[in-house]
Image (cartoon, rainbow, N blue to C red; front, top):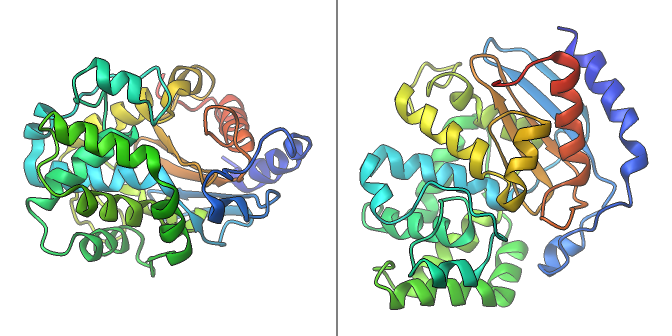
Length: 303
């Protein structure tokens, strides 16, 4: 497969889509990002790399980090996790209070905001320094320096009114055991992780390789656990546009309001795209189209 030529072709083809979305300005630090930034990186399980555009420039990964905290939690508590968070698509916005109220404080899945906050609350029972240990875990996956963007963290913290409401509501329903401020501190930190498309694609290779980091051979998840994480990414990784992503792209993946999207083709590769302009669902306009064109032209998907 001539991936480099295909990436260049798709990169040029989607240029007219610039201007059709909007950066996530409800988080002021994200609103300052150049909307025309655009990068793509493919990393294969056998060590090949194909990239174009701003593939090595770091950006705020936001909700993509929820995959990392889910993997950490599954490693520690495995199936016990599902006693406090569900595995069904939300069909609602990622920060919906209405759905959480209807379901009495049990988040629909670990990739909506409330679900990720419950996962963090579970991790707090087992980690001594959760912010440091989260970074260490991600560094292990991507072999490069990873850090938090303090400006993004402070912006999240200052304007995170809805997240405060979500955690407090779950606390009232006894589904948050630790102090609200502690849970939110870890949540805002994980959302402020900065990575590049190259780093993100590298960090997701274990999910394309049955739970094993290809370069080191270290097992992160069992094959069964990996299957479950990939299933959740396919059905829940794009909020209330998850069905559309499955229909058009057909890969497990996860998006973030920083404009990043990561997806995997099991036993083959992972791909990361970054373009900050979002559609009304909070997903990258150009990122969604890039992945649709890639799977259409290669004929590769999980279906």
